[in-house]
Image (tube, rainbow, N blue to C red; front, side, top):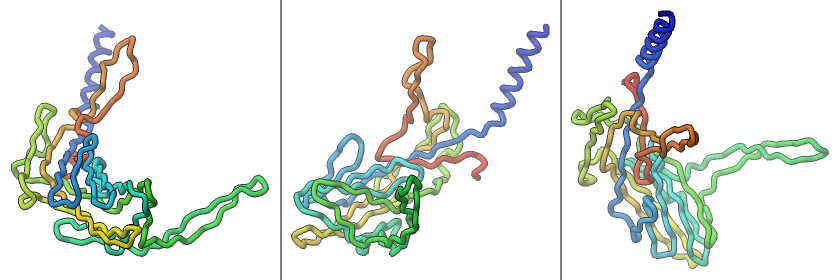
Length: 246
């Protein structure tokens, strides 16, 4: 009888704990390009745009809020200069500058007489950034959107068996459209204006219990389990929320 009581008490405690746990929800958003300069190509699942001046732009949005930055790959034999003063991130018609004329304080350290010494160095942000031949550089400043979309016809708190979604067939109907305008100067002096436009094409609300899964079941002979996000994709981003967020 005592053992039965202990078992029942344990079950009751577990039920109470699970009832108090805050269930998280993921809003997974798909991003689609439109009206982009250069030739679009698919490498894995990332968006890649080949420009005429042997430069590739690679986008990977998968992060909290969506990383609107890009990897610039210089495949040519000459240097390419990015003029951040004439480069912009534009979202829903609002322009944001890539060059903000900021000044940073960096700690420089060196070893002397077995003691690590340091000093503060003022570093000014560069307007012109050179990407040498056959190299790459990452540019990132803004997010796509940290807002949770709450359209009336989109269930906000689905169960683990549901996956409500809302699709947008064209940019005019989308809640978010954004673009990168990048000014490039090649080594021969030629100037190029690169434009990559995107829009939110699908929104999916997912119960947190559906998001992370294991590649294999746990057994006595296989105790190593690798977990992965079933929705992860360079063409998507996410925002996490719960019932307390509203």
